[in-house]
Amino acid sequence: MIALDNGFEEVVGIVADVEASAARLMAATGYVEIARGAVDAGALALLGMAGRPAREVLIGHRDVARGRIRLIALDGEAAPLARDGAQAWDTGGIFDINLRALGGNAPIERLHRRLGDAGYLAHAPITDWDFGPLAVREVVESDADGLCIALMERVRPPLAGYEGVSGPASWVFNSTQVVADFDAARRFYRDVLGWLPVQETEGPVAQASGVNCMGLPVGLAAGLTMRIGIYHPAGRMEGSVEIIGFGMKTLDFSASQPPMRGWASLRFPMSDIDGFAQKAREAGCAIIGPIEAEWRPHGRTRAVAAITPWGARVEAFEMQAGA
Image (cartoon, rainbow, N blue to C red; front, top):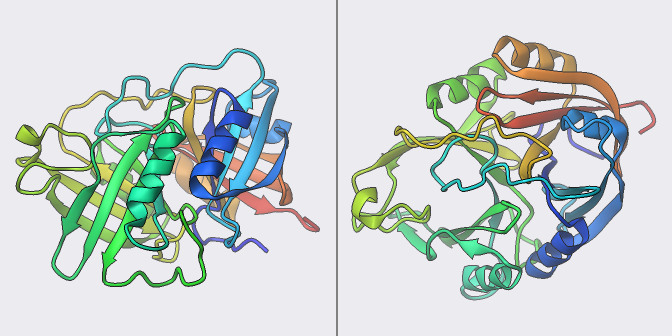
């Protein structure tokens, strides 16, 4: 059974070839196929693609029934990239999803290599972050469809909550949006929706040497700061949303929407989608729905989509009786 009001259940990506993309990601992450078929008309409408025939493949971790990836490809010629030419610090839409590298020694090197074999290219080499009690390793990489994945490895203290979760990759536990107006995005998730902060920090973008995981020039990065906020309905990093503000003028891709390729939406099971839609509309989001949609393999739902002013699409689903 799906847990309600507990973060996103899955992330939706639009690709050129759904079969090829699913096969590459499964080979790299160890994920398995969960479902496939023609995309439901209601689900297409939520993405702003009503009347556009498309196919989908849902893949996910074999041990965890959440944090899945739904890949969708429209029939016919592929659309352009949503963040075509964007750098990691450019704003608009959904930037990435986060996976933990698991299993054995140096798991991030192995998972990074597997994603490289699947056609992913890193924005920068694996970066080591040492914050005293906390040490992590991170690498950010993207493929030709604009699907960006950040890999994280916990060095210390030992990672808790993933006992019994096999590698090489965890389920999708977090997703990032790079925003031009950090305060507005923070206000939306924390104050309007009432989600709890998992983490709120402001600090340097890079190590003192300028080394960073976002691909910023090392000669400039050492002098830059960023604000980070991570939010979740219950304050957990399980289907959480992260916002990053670099506080500088960048290219903006907020107007880029499906069917353009890349990460298209986050899907949240909720107990009150009407209340969510009202709050989101009052906060300046464009709203689609509510409409009925088949959410394969979960069944019939009522659903709405909220498109934030910075172009991130948040879909809320309410399960129908008997689904």
